[in-house]
Amino acid sequence: EELYDVIVVGRGMMGTAVARHASKAGARVALVGREEKPKSEWASAEVFGAHYDEGRITRTLDPDEVWSWMAARSIERYGEIAEEGEEEFYSEVGHLVVDNQGTDGYLRKLLTNAQRSGGSGTLLSPAELSRQFPYLRFPAGMSGIHQRQDSGHLSPRRLVAAQARAAAGSGCTLVADHAVR
Image (cartoon, rainbow, N blue to C red; front, side, top):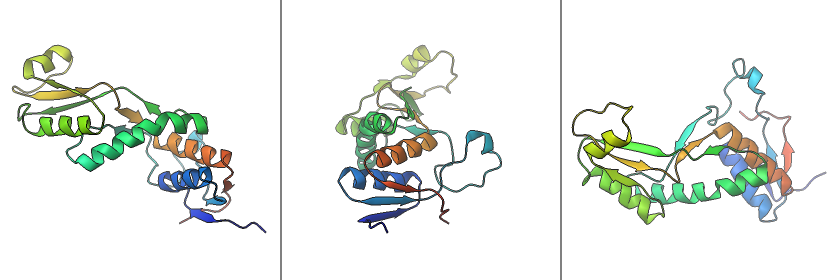
């Protein structure tokens, strides 16, 4: 008979994160939930989690200062999670935001929030936007912000796998033979 300090029900993005953190803190943890089906079975697999998609954009450019700060803290941890879970899930490819209100309104707010949270970005006038992205066609008067670092694409499926492996590596018991509905 196993005794646990924490039993996490659900092997999705939140459940695997909780299990990883609790296990790293020394708690005896059980993570209950089935494993992701192999990619060859995705088309026939029923959807069983919010992480079912394969791509999400992640960036620190956001009008909400708290969201921007939290995103920055998450992005800082991606390397550690990937190493512990032996799974790459994040590609730092940059992010472009375009707006027709010039660089003093919405775009300025995004950049200010990103900078407050430790992120960066470059405001682009309409001419600079067209010059840096000649392969894109923008309506007249569009300005932008190009965030080269601390932004990109992540695979939620791979993130879940990495967090589950990292939790197991810290002593978490994975109970994969029970589906949670």
